[in-house]
Image 1 (tube, one colour):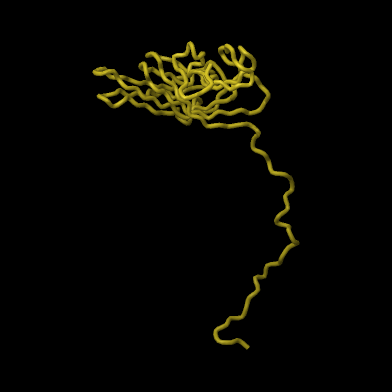
Image 2 (tube, rainbow, N blue to C red; image 1 turned 90 degrees about the horizontal axis):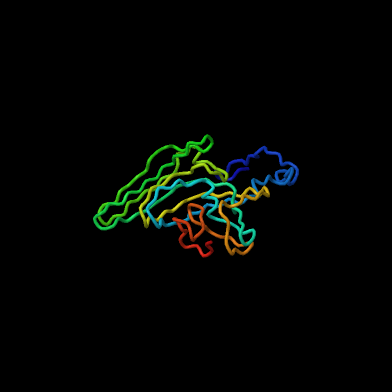
Length: 213
């Protein structure tokens, strides 16, 4: 007999399967990659006014591992440019202009050909920040090559931040740096200028890194 407003209980009708069936895994899960992918923001300074094409080889040569006293290999084998950001303060009464163009014309590394520019006024610095169009090949992962990633035209003293995604696919390859080392210690990671040259010769030394060569 029901008491008060109690309703008769209903069975769900579900049949319980064998214990633990929903926990069976047919095989170990797939591993997406053993490679190393790293997002970095590197900072450089222009020592002199210049117009410079920066290649994908230059970008990968910014972080090296010494093989011997005079030889080095890129720590990473693939690079994607996310953005370039620059600041420049003018001398009193003289405006400063920054120019950034993803102007690669090589098939497989084509840029968007857009010009990004700004000019300082008064005490406010010129400032440019832009990345390659996401549909261009300049905005995709690229191997080390002499193809142009982007071009910059900057006055002396310009601070340049380059945001990159670097990838090491663990294929056992050795991609040698464009320029050799001097007095390096094998196994040490070193940083270089944005143009891939040694610290003594670069117009774009890296800022804030301890191991430069």
